Length: 171
Image (cartoon, rainbow, N blue to C red):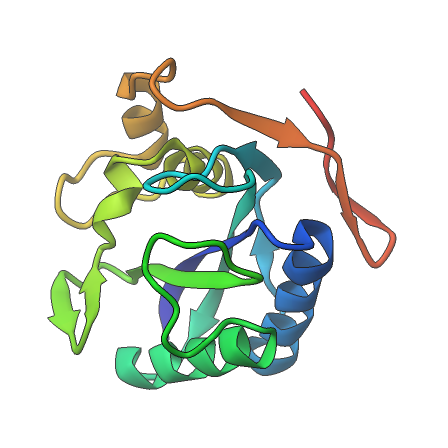
């Protein structure tokens, strides 16, 4: 079993698709640990702001099998199979880490480079797993967030509830 962290995002019907993604992930992989939900600007293209969060769970699947399952969930929730990398999307699910694996498995690079470059990934990961260590740097995610230029990308925690459970409250 490996501890897996996934980044989830949506900028089309954001609340609906983020909740639908959580439902699908829970149905497929069981209980999830959840970060707060954050609002952030689209990066790399002009588009509506995203809602982003990080979830964690224990997985016995191989990386390639997990990636295929996540892709099926994205497509089932409206993401075109040939969607451009920097484009609007109903649901985006990325494998951020898979245990302490450092590798490229098919098109999945682990750990995902965006962890250290995008506030919308690092902040919720540092919140959810502050003492977990980045597999390449050895530093905790809390330390990475502390050292991050937090003025470079604005992320704001927002109110979000899922099945009546308050996941996050606005800052």
